[in-house]
Length: 374
Image (cartoon, rainbow, N blue to C red; front, side, top):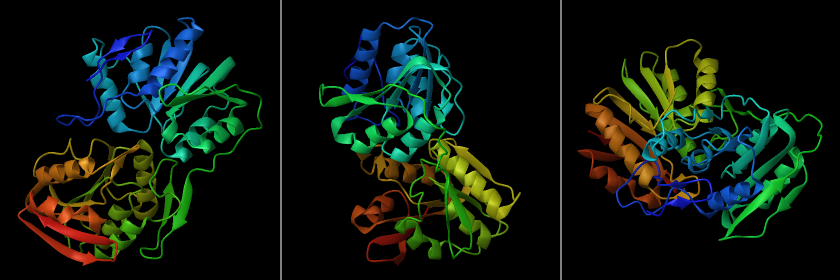
């Protein structure tokens, strides 16, 4: 893999999760453009720089030791990548302590470097949280590959920060440079909420939660077919989002024990709050993680999963396949994985390679609900 070479550093970086013959690199031209721009400004070593949504540490590690750098984002895998890439480039794994997007920022910051996220609601929430956190003379600089840079990103920068200047394109990347101006305090529109009829619950959704405005159609198809009569089974909601699958299942299975895991810190925050609202102080484990990678082998009886088909802007079934493998490892013999998926994704044949029995529980014109038994 090529190295990231900028005036700040030469770095050897890897993506997360790792896969053999990785076709993608852990940085892109937008990272290079942002770092080259910052180098031209010749900031003092005392300058405080905040990096937002740094996929695998390319920006923060480049700046380590050159300025005072903080890093915040919503991806657990991004934080794992930061730690691994620090070690890979001769630094202590905890040389930069990343701040989950669910936690507040502590400024003031002289520069804020933003990789524009796929979910613009996350960008909006992050910009709102910068209120009162910018030092005099600060700049907020957002970067993206042009094909992933919607006009709305510039509109949000202008709305919450100040006038925006767009750079020329370099290697199909662009910078948006916002100069802060005094603004009336903004109230965040997040978290959002919506209600379900069955089960009769209200769901809260922080800014980066999948389908935060309403239940996605895959989950809607899945809910009526969640397993009943689970007794005291150990159940995991893998990729839990706002926790709706686990909460609906728990309401039907009062003696079962639940673990909810997602790689989004905002999803985990939402799921924990929704669990408490629906189930009070009923015992539960809710954690950010790399799927079930940290789960003990043969420690679960049931796994529920509505698998993702993308990681930021990268579309594919790599993450889903990995989740199926993790579920198989974590399930007891005889345990079952229940999933919902688009018909065209062909999950039945994939699951059949890992599990001894795969059956179709239900189907709609667009989705299938499958049960795979170990």
